[in-house]
Image 1 (cartoon, rainbow, N blue to C red):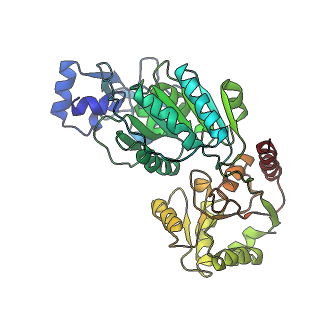
Image 2: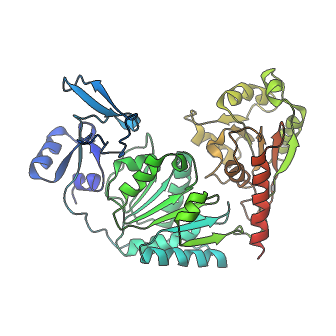
Image 3: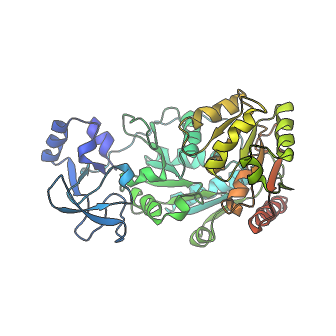
Length: 442
């Protein structure tokens, strides 16, 4: 397989922005190896993200072609797609994948994980969709290892997609370690281009705009997470990236009613792999906390909570509702311990800061909901400041609570919901966690 075939098979890519010389691309087009696709179709649909709504496909005076063009506003952050834009894709049949894969995992599945793993494999064999509904810390990723290996042995190409970069970055080293002889590519905004033809692609759902009929098996991790659960275009991207008859495995601790109704095949695990209950959050009033922080004073209850974590050398995550409040508050918390850091979606160093917390180099992080899922740190303690804020729905609060008690060495953990009045979503989250614990005892 040559380098063009390895890169473009299953991909749909902007012709003017490829990692190959223009002459090489033109020769492949002339030879018929690369197919040229119009950026905006005649009926006004974007060929990359499949958007066609009138408020997303807009007209403008195009300097490139000198006439009025249409462009797609929806996926413009990945490069402008216009009427005169050309996309390219590999025109030949997909290559056969190699079958010499190794499986390097010595862990043991619980009885519930084994059952779920077998059920997933059976659904994939029948080419049917499947939902893994399992609580945070149930070991969802581990139960997928055997079905993934079975698919690889059949020469199938697999995509593991997640809505958020942080989840992708957590999954990538784990998958690479389990399948050391398998070519694995990791795709997210700003990721380096990797060479070769990947048997497994681990990708954010946004990156799937750049794929079409590429994968034999699709796994969507954290299928309930924003933005995937709120953006129909991302759902279309998953379907477009999969081959027409490819099964999709959805993985979620808090699936939506829509997903529950749409997926007939389902595996449920309401017990963590180590057999302990999920820690139940404690509600703690923190009246007028925003005004106090804005006046450069940390509420006393919050000071006590943070100082207790530091004294016990327990890593902590402190969730706040807005980036503005995080940035305003971090200098105040640094007065408690200069090593405390803050992360949010606009922080390009958040990967390094999370690693520093994991390594014990810093005591804790102030964070936005960017770390509500996809992060595992032994013995981490969790607090939400303003748990009553509208941003924190029950799903987000359950996921945040799910960061604690994940390690077999530290199966418990403190989860404090500091609030300025208990919300319905807080009550719902606590009730659901208690429900999971009761179900897990059966």
